[in-house]
Image (cartoon, rainbow, N blue to C red):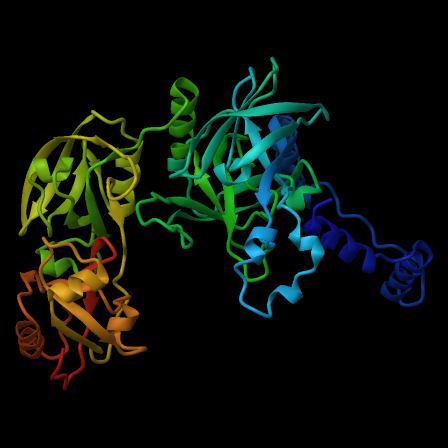
Length: 505
């Protein structure tokens, strides 16, 4: 049994109540409510609770329809112990070897760890969708069906960008769930989450609502990941990863993937990958064994009320091009830093996230038409979508517009060969390098860090530290500053508001 499961069971046992004591509690409650009598309250009439019972019956119907298609995924993976071996012992500093007894001088032995997740059957012939992080590194995968059969499963393919995997079991006529349309979800809609919380309580179901849609991934290690998550307050716990999120019709609208919690358990905020993304990835994996994501070769920001006027926009809507990768589909089509993408193939682009999802779902080689606003004037650019291979080859979004009030709180210097070498700044990049950032300053709140390069200020190229400081001083009191900042390979626009008496960059 997993350690987390043991802890859960022990916690439950500690708070269990003997039957006799429980009976006394119930009797005491009845006496108290009846003021000394043992008369129970009369049940409410069917008419007075008809709405509630109708809702219960509807949810029972959905749960009964979906649960047979839910699976428990048990994974075994090989790990390597970090305990020093005999050879490693020789490299320990003098005096440290005494802390490692003879048992550690034996050759290092492989160890195994076990993990548990969930999944959902999407075809009668045994294709199952789960999270990539559930099966990553697995040497053995077993799937438990609702009828308690345990089947061996193999990985057909994975989508690491979206944390998805497709498994296959050797079976036929399996129950499935229908695909739903996640693009139609609205906050407040009822949803059900299925899975095996803590790996122990298999085939559980929880009910909640859609708390929000189009959420970014706060834990993303790569700003190029599309995100677009569904947030829900339906309880999701460790072990629920890979399980389905369904709507009131019992249709699959998402795959549960992570939670935000200070204690590691559900705290009211669970997140699911929308079916719009899941189905596109699953279809490619089943057909080709892999997923090829489209890319444009740009980094992007959201248009916000704080930065819209810098780009001569009437509405705070669209995706700002903050960086164009050389020799990419975007650069070959003629896109420039500062362009604002407002549509793709006739679909409106309201944010950087919209563009990321749209491009990610496109097959490489697809023709795309981009609607652009350049210096306040609309234009159209046609290009061929490229293939994502990692690195910078995909539209990425880095939203940094969160600075307000106070002085800038940063010091800059000219971009020297030494600075380029120290911070791995490419030769083609021009601007000023950030030397220091004062804590709690507008620059700090905007996410600017030492080693970042300020490329533009208020849509104009930054040539030197003195020119940058002069431009800051000339900025009218109380007006925002828009900076194009290069940081660790990606560029993004940041909006800062300097202090009234600021005299330095």
